[in-house]
Amino acid sequence: MLGNVSAACRDTSVDRRDVYRWKENDAKFLAAFTDAEIESTELMEREAYRRAVEGVQKPVYSRDGTLIDTVYDYSDTLLMFLLKARAPQRFRERYDHQHTGANGAPLTFTLLIGDDDDGDDE
View 1 (cartoon, rainbow, N blue to C red):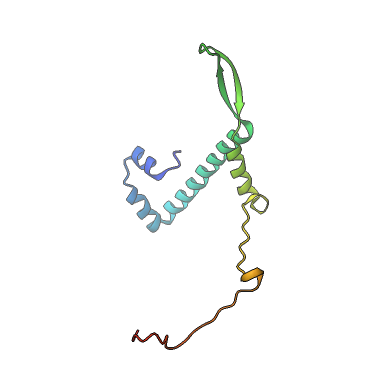
View 2: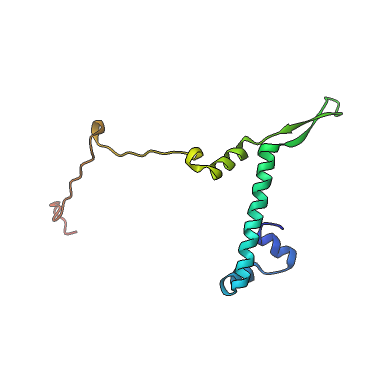
């Protein structure tokens, strides 16, 4: 599974335009394509989880290039993305936009209709 239409088309010698045409015109193909997308996404989510929570072993070398140990490296960024996806109500960015007038007063508007009295005919 490649998880990418262009890569899959290259591997199978299929024109990617055909894939999108098949999606539009063939319900069975669309269902299979959708299932493959879901499976691919789940595979990526599993890999993100592995890197964020389980960690990835990284080699540690001495100054002379000798392998002396391995350590686990974790991805805080991937962990945050996983948390935002799983619990957006708790982990998404929050923006509070308020529009007010001077000193926090409500905004007021004046609507002018009619001639602008500037002398031109527009």
